[in-house]
Image 1 (spheres, helix red, strand yellow):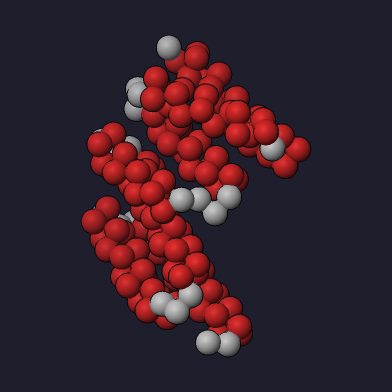
Image 2 (cartoon, one colour):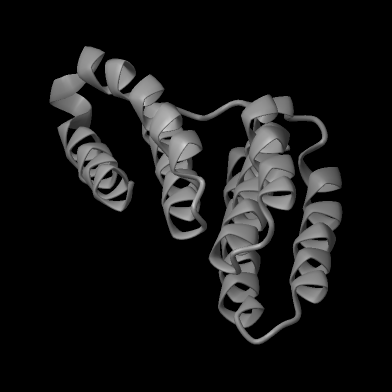
Length: 153
């Protein structure tokens, strides 16, 4: 497959994900998840010869589903399933990992799972410290959320 074909697929995928994200606010959760499943099913075959791209596609879909569950304050057991699924796929980089961890920690804060959120962020901080120059903004956000958790105790 030519490079420009892959770029076009990437653009199509980005459009589809954006439309799903915008539309999901008005949908029932099951319908929003189904929309993401359909996007994944339609794009995975297009990148089947490119395992790295297929993995990134799965990651983006998984992250969107996880975010939906967090935004809708679903039970911890449900949110944790999606969280574990995206952790299993791995993260593109530390920024993506930190973003997901902060989303989960905020969810934990909103839903009274303070110890879980705190543990998650305390584990993340050393990684951010090791890459401080690159991720100082994420370290700052992580510390802000930790302060909110401390305050909520």
